[in-house]
Length: 243
Image (cartoon, rainbow, N blue to C red; front, side, top):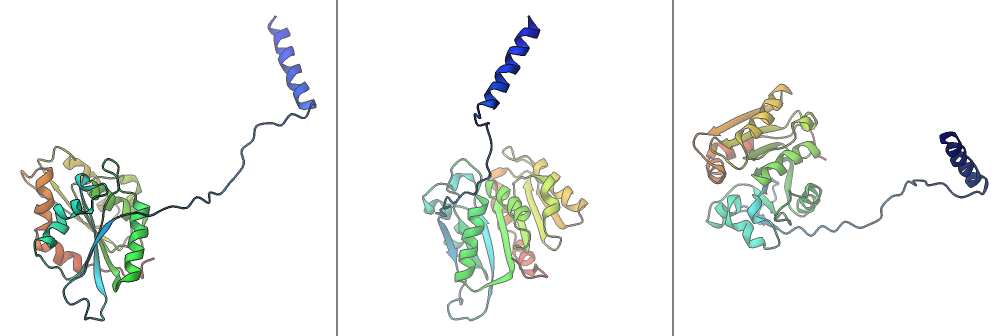
């Protein structure tokens, strides 16, 4: 019975081929769909910028998860933009893009595209572009380090995480300063430790600061209020011209 059934199926297949019925296929195509970049962002220019002809360092600030969406004023409520709003001055430009999603990670390609636009419109030293990110923005900082290694001179991820398997793609000349708190119950300290240890294995310029007894919300300002962070950051410079 089985032999008769197999013969019938084979016969039907051969008949189909003989009739010239088209087979299923997959065709290579290229998408022409436009990608809209609608990121909102804040841009800070330091005192004296307008009257100067010099180029300036630029810090990319990536905020935490609760400032995402479409209301740009939420970005001013915490982190580096909050320090600026409260009157603190810095000797560099600050580009603070808003994550358009309240739930998802930063769209890294859009962040890079918007950064390129900012750099084209301002006097930015291309060898001194840095990334500082907190929580969800810390994940973004690690992602930028892996996806655009020739752009940034230094990274300061605060209470973030990422994929250690792609850290070999980071720039050998870039520097990293990782921050985390021991009492973080949102993003575990181990997430930063694993990434830091991988960087050291790769012989990258990296250091780790762990704040004892500091939780997830507290580590943001603990890192940003450390004057050594900014002194260290401004000393970093790419040896080659970024792309």
